[in-house]
Length: 251
Image (cartoon, rainbow, N blue to C red; front, side):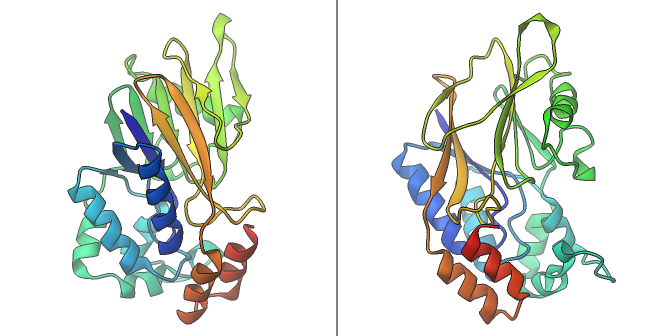
């Protein structure tokens, strides 16, 4: 079975559609959305409609920090990430909000633990962005000996860490887009799958990952999409110009 892992869509309908089409072409049989369907982008309701359709078809869907903010927008905006929460809340229907409110923070799928941020206290939205934080998350997840893989998002970058032999710390591996990586189950692995809807590494193309469970192979993908149309949707919505520029520049 091939599992498509998508995270941080951020109300970017164009990027989501491109990634789903690409995953289907790659033979994906199941889908998991690792949170942050909304926030920043200009089409939250349309994205929620698509994700809810995926859930009805069997996709795993998790809560992310921007989904939580859309349910309960902060009264006072203290950082840029909170700037669209109230607007997003107003765009969502009651059905959308009920769906978000019922989402779990983690999910198990065979030998995989799925989470938006860190498996250590997942509701605190800690970043997994280096060997130390990856080690903390992996240790929390693998207190269950049947968990061999941890997949998350939140950091908007694609990265892979694994526990080598000899009881040492985690080692980092830099993935190359489109190149399958052997991830045998005798080791333990933790990956961040990148952001579908808001890349921040200087490339505008969308990100997701595909895990082939039968052959223990993980492939990180980059997918071109109409990022100019996504930026135009941000501007039509009257959201901060920085969010449109970020889509155009991938930063």
